[in-house]
Length: 570
Image (cartoon, rainbow, N blue to C red):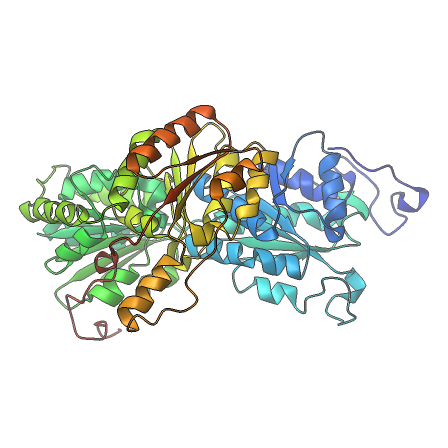
């Protein structure tokens, strides 16, 4: 790491710093921060420059190529790029922004990182250190900025000087990756970044992971062994335990229900893979349900529970176990380790899949056949996309069907915004996925409304040569808004209609490859050409109104009373 030349005033001891000794470096706060990030395997910063971050950017410029900066056109996209990279890899990613407006611009991405369990570290600028929270009207001043960040960040701290930086970076990343993954934030004042000091590097810290209670494992295994109609629900917390989920499902003959964040934990072509509507049909008769790394919100709050249903929850976040209903057995720990313990406690023999599972799958296939043209577009995407390609689903009509029916063979190949479901997140996040996975094809599944949130980031794709492909399904409206107004408000339509550019001409004005596809066959041809070109691309797909999939997402209660059943607490 390059260090700054020291002036006489910066000599060791001149400001109370200890004299250098073995292992002690003389660095600015920014240099120490960059060096700490690099020591943790982080080589990319997603960020916009600004006066409050000048020292940080200069330290990266001096780093000898140890870290690169990918700069989009908006702080929101910087956050989304870090988010996409984190969701695609499961590794910590870093974004930076100026204070106040910059932090607020990035806050939607950080909130989504919180909801999806993504390890994103935000480096937030701050006004001069002697003016923080004084209300003096400094550029970009935001009262109690750390207090704001704590609403959607697991750990928030202020870097007070060079000596603080290595330990705080290490602690922030340990919090982000340990236990339930979530975003974290470090802020640094404008005058602190370039202040030098004595620095002792800190190695990455061991992650704190709870150990599953062996007695709880025995209790859970006993319930599963006796179960006649077991069901497994797997969410985003199971992404790194796919092999264990599959092994357990095959031993028990238990269908694995996934939706949004859990897609790919079980290959969706597997006979025991169950989409949300299939899970709903099986829920009524299930006797034991195992939830792995999932909030189980749809199932417990909407489908209902009763005293006949035994629930086991395996989650690294102990707070999740008792939401909505107290489980019969709570396994507090990592999904992979917890499932390995369960497998060790269960017999090795495999049960045959139950006949009702195949029947539910057949019903689902028949129901999907009515969702055209969405299914045709999804089949075209699957046919053109390589097996390891990644789809980032924005909030759009085709995406709503995609989260139910797109074929996914492995985790982190279908990326969803989870329960935040925030319109317009898709393209920026896809750019981050592409930056983190340079050899793979990446497709953003967008509607015209959501894509225009970040349409200017086509410039970012071209500047940084990120060959992500934007699919823009264009119905000239906020399509879901229009459907709700039409179906539930007596067709009183308001604020739904959109004026769009010529998307192909718009993309080509950046020098980007662009196609128009009028049907599924045209989409498949254009996708193959775009993927083969390995360059940024946009494909415009004009569409009309499409049939609704919502009866397969918001489904009726099956068990219990109107309120979720809760057994008496001990």
